Length: 404
Image (cartoon, rainbow, N blue to C red; front, side):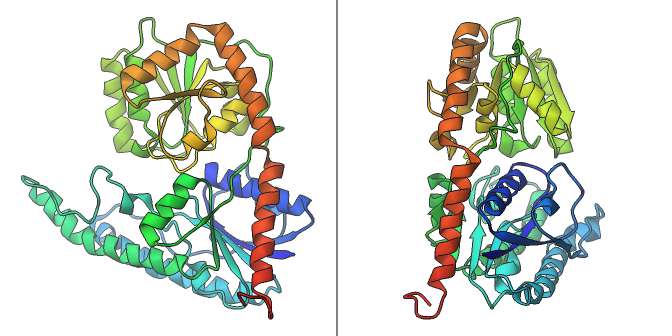
């Protein structure tokens, strides 16, 4: 089968998932052709799997007030123009099926609305979470009592834009013949947001890339993910701060950093006497080194749709302490590959101490974690599951099929 692929994913977990999906599909004998807007080069080079067509879109972020007020409508217009340009290219490519993936800025990709000559499948990691989860409040709620004039003005400007985005997301997801997602938790989130039933197609971990190495582990805690509120860096610092002294350092690796959020974290860590070290844009080899030498991984994301990081850590023999929410409950098995915890600092601190103060127990759990990932979460299983869904979508679209 010849598969047209569209994505707009920066370097990170979602792009790694796509990388592994394409690698698996090619190894299974399929051909892929890729379309995307311009993105910075990174370690995940998709061109090894098939030709990549870079079709730039004109959106550029500017921090001035005028840009802030017009940012969303301008971005929407230019992303639609990109999709309208690429759609006919994909239709004319001779591909059998479109496999679309998440879009930066707009989670559900527009491209499905502009491709008309083939079945269309989207792998949606999650809906646009800021629309459907309080961060710190739901965007469609008005400012609360006592809100500042600035907050009221901001709400007046952005409320219609959020409402428009919600409709655009709904219109986009309706354009696909099949919606795939990464967990049962995500399937429920998609149903709540759109009233659409998705199919769970679990991701996998490349256990040859994330390797176990018999290196001595050190007494520090590692965290990995965007340095922003959704990944719970603040909660990780609070957890370390609740541990007995001498406290371990917290090393956090991030490809993207919310600078305003970071400015709040630094004095918080100092007040709690937490040695917080942020490492930006680490190459894969350095991330792997931390996963092979840290004493524990902390995963404090709230309502995380899936979370590749705990399984990547497990593949390196590192057990995880994770908040028992979201899709993480489907991947982290208490006492097998980590410890599921209440989100309170005291509970997380207790779980971390259980690992760091008992090296023998930690190493036994790490060995169990590696075995668990190899047996249950390999990329081969994920690729075959994806292939089955894609073949089914192509078959159902053929003339004479029940769903054609």
